[in-house]
Length: 297
Ligand SMILES: [Zn+2]
Image 1 (cartoon, rainbow, N blue to C red):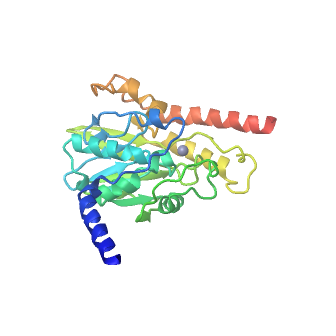
Image 2 (cartoon, protein in one colour):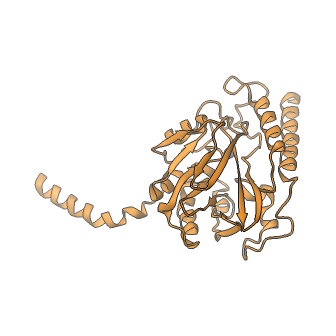
Image 3 (spheres, rainbow, N blue to C red):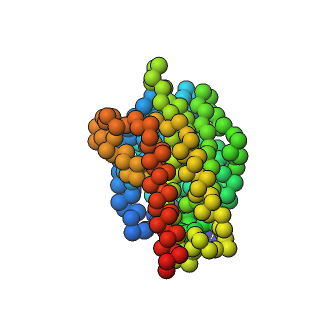
């Protein structure tokens, strides 16, 4: 009987083997997940920079003849959409050489394990984010620790330091520490050229002071520097050369007012040299309100 069972199991393994490239990801079900994961066709933003995310969760592809860089992977269930978007542009997954992340919450990092598997890309993250990505579970210091969903762990993550410029062929992309929403939050900047016309892009991290009910920004033991970290990040964003701002939730930086999600037509406000400054100012106000609420109540 054991031998027969072995044969049956082997035959079954052979039957399912061709499907292994379509490995299904267990979907995370959250209140906003379906809206966030609404399909969005891939769009060329400028030069070698493309939007390949879902309608509500950003993912950016920067391309070169020597390989591509992908920032963020959405939810676990976003990975097939991001992959299809990359391929719809005529690019191959195996040419994605480097995958990066804004912050290691499930809605921006949940799809990275699958996208790494499909591409073989190197994944690099800030030290704190690397710990989360490797475990698939948030870590102490996260204001949302007790409410953050787990997601597929990423097998091979290398930490970078904020002094590094990361490179793939001619692509040079710079990480900027903008912690606060999580201790590992990272903004990314790069220059994208279309012929002689070059633009400074910033993919800024989420800057919202969101937490679980059991966490106070003004008084906690797990992330006592949260408020100072936010302040440092706001100053960093204000100091960047920032001509085009994109954010992990594209609506937060009004991407769909600046680029048609249907035709990809670029609007007059696509380039906005004050966008990062305004983004930081809005986040600073939201943090001040949160601090006032914590102190008042
Ligand atoms: Zn988050």
